[in-house]
Image (cartoon, rainbow, N blue to C red; front, top):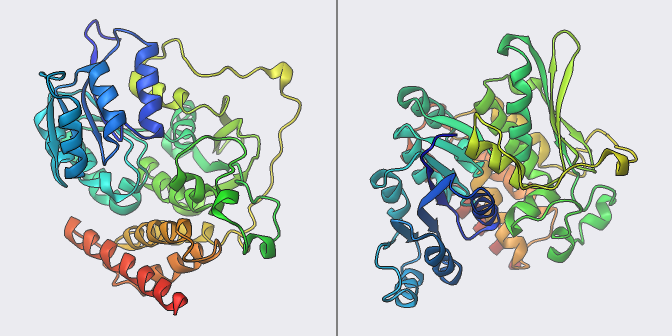
Length: 392
C-alpha cells in the first residue's frame, strides 16, 4: 500500500455495507482517509460518523434529514460541509479529491453518483449492483474512456474476480454463481405463497439490509447478479450458471476449458470482499472471520428450482436483451419489494410483477441515461397500478 492513506468516499455509509466499510477502515489504521460520506436520511448515524472521521463533506439526500444533521453537528463539525438534495451525492463525487468510491446505496438512488465516479476515472467498489443492472453498457463504456477500475464488492463477484486471475479471458468456459437459496430453499410453493416479511427476513447465513435480504429470499438477487456478471466480466449470459450452496462457504467459481474449476472460499463475512476491493491489488491482514476446515463437516450443492423461484430466469433474459430491460426489471422489483414489505402484495407476487413490467415496457436497445430513468419511472407506475388493482 502507498505511504499516503487512500482517500475514500462512501456512498451509503449508514447502511449495512457502509458500516462494514467503516469497520474495515478502523481495523486498518492509517490506510484510509474517509473524505466523503453519503446516505439518504439516517442523520443520527451520519452524525456519529462525521464526528469520528471529520470528512470534507457529508451528504443526506433527504433535505429535512440534512437539516437535522446540521443542527446535531452545530459547532462540532467545522471542517465538514453538509450537502443535501437529489444531486448532492454526484456533486460530492465530482468535487472532492478521492482515490476510491464505495458505491453502497441500495437501488437506483446511487446510480448517478456511481456513474460520476466512473466518468472521473476513480476506482469504484461496486456494492450497488443496480448500477450495472440498470446502466451496464453506460458504466462499462464510461470506464473504458476514463480508465476507471470497477471492483466488485458483492461476495460472489469478488470471488469470480479473484478466480479469473487463474487464467485468460478466452480460457473461461463457465462462471458458476453460488446462492444460499435463502430462507425458503426447502419450502413448497404453497407455503411460500403465505410467507410473511418476517419469514423472508430470516436469512440463514448472511446479515444484510431488508431489501437485499428479501431479494435473496426471492432469488432476484441472483438474477441481478447474472446481469452484473455479464457486464463486469464480459461474458455471454448463457455461460453463467447458478448453483445452490446453502453453507455459503464457496462464494463463486470459474470453470476453465481444461476442466479446472477455481473457487474462492471463506466465511460469510462481507468485510473480506470489501477489504479486497479497498486494498486491491494488495492483500493486507484481514479483519473478517477465518474459515476453520476442522469444523467444516460437509458442503452441499443443488440446482435452483425456477418454478418456485420465478425471478431467477429473468436475469438471463435481461442479460441477453440488454438495453432498457435491466432498468425495467430493477425498478419493478424495487417497487414490488416495498409493496410486499407494506403488506400490499404476497411474496410470490414480487416475481410476477417484475416479469409483467419487464414484458410490457417500452424497450430501447441503446438507451441514454434519460431513457433509463423514464423506464424506471414507468415500471414503478406499472407495479403501483397492479397493487391498486389488488386492493380493489
